[in-house]
Image (cartoon, rainbow, N blue to C red; front, side, top):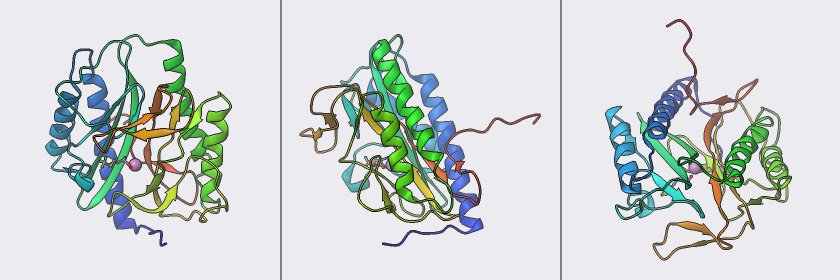
Length: 256
Ligand code: MF3
Ligand code: CO
């Protein structure tokens, strides 16, 4: 296993890939409305990505047929957009998107509420996002990878939630999926030691019930076995000498 350390030049490109993906997510979140099909969401996402001169990296990845993964309610990840699937008030919708900028990949996911949702669903979305931020408190040079994993798990499980075991985060760079694998739960060993210049896609996938998932017959869509709701939150993160940099969240521009 080899984990790539990005050079200054590569980090610049990763940052731009991340920045453009952050904008993509923000535009998608503003467009989401009850009555939209998941196909429309994918179509819009692809348009935004291409408007930057970038390429959607999920499209045709291992045969995946779309640019944006749209996963509704008990769908955890990798939902396939469809003209027949209409999102409705009360749904929770996870959008996972990625793009390639000058050969460098970014990857990020958000779970959105459609209109008014149940307090239970809102809590799940919130805790999933918070678990990511608990995890990256440990995303520092010198720490071990599984310090991040353990923090995510501990936080999510403290709410009684399930932490999905069958899917994990990953390194990212000139490929969408690079070493190392980044579980959201504790495994044996401490994982690699984090070093400045590593770029990681950290992506808790959390359910309101058990952690078991299964694949639908389409070969892609991952759903919870018990039918419980699921949420996903992901960012591409740069390990530095100090605090980690989240590359896929827009920075506020002051006085510009
Ligand atoms: N963010 C997803 C992941 O890391 C990428 C989806 S792969 C695709 O697994 F094939 F579904 F596009
Ligand atoms: Co990912």
